[in-house]
Length: 262
Length: 128
Image (cartoon, rainbow over all chains, first blue to last red; front, side, top):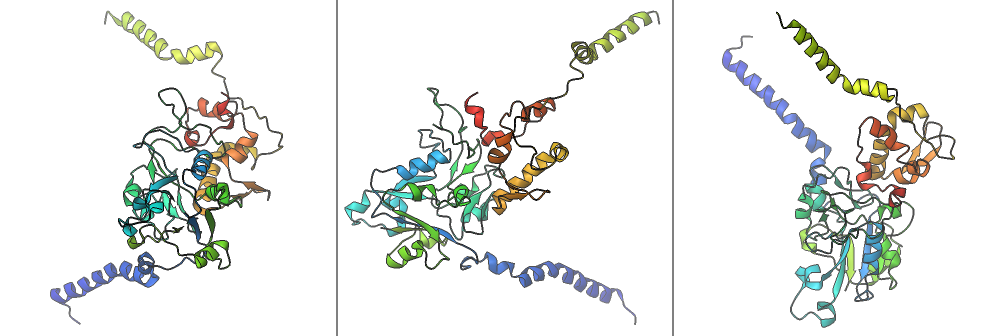
């Protein structure tokens, strides 16, 4: 069989196209694309979540915030710009901006709402992190590896809840009057360092010891219920079954795992 | 080449000056200095053998960190089958609570500055 130059180029071109298509076919056949789609359904393993009952939460009480910030060595810079937040208060219209209207009941409109990292099922912070310092654990916790954080703050831009804080200042430093920003060090938990982002870790270090998150433990009103959504007979599921609950900004598709009884 | 004497003298002075740190340490008895580690633990052995720890402790700590932070696995099974909690402050510093007499000895000698303690708190740091 005689092949002229024209045929040779045609066959060669098809061969090259075949090689170029192989990686694409590999990806599609492994189903990696479906994993990246937005509504992926529940994880096979555990799914940790929390219900916050705002009807029980007492206005003016900061027990959960104080306890959390003290065991996690969260510094207090006394300055909104540099503030580090793990749990904090937001007014109703900032907590549920899509569910706000001008005639919201007075008991709700003025009161502060307790907010923290939502440990989203579809976390945007994880998607944008260039170093995989933020990642989703198998139990659903959106966790941070501070060793890997390069402080780019993409996650802060991505998080629609403002749950992430950047360490502009050295958390181990002293204020102008010589007092440390961290009042009392918990030596069993590390501090952070300048230039990393931090957020609530759902008390992963306590869960490892079989303890529930600190905020749920210290709440005298038992306003915080922590549990596993996969356990159908858990207290968490019972509370979710028997109450109407809402989540923060559900329309964004992040699937937050903090549920509120308002 | 009438100035060769001056050149040679200059070279000798130059050599003396440039090797001064070596001479100084030999005379001062610091040349034979080796770091001395003080072990104050009541435990008989470390998680792995002394030889292994001496060479590989940094790798071991890296592996521990990755295992705990990324895989949520906190139990280390040593070569002798003993289980340990993978924790710098809870396990390592429980025995080696004298960081300045232990960790810092070699780290200062070799002029390495591990960044562990930028975040992890040394228990007795408060007392210092």
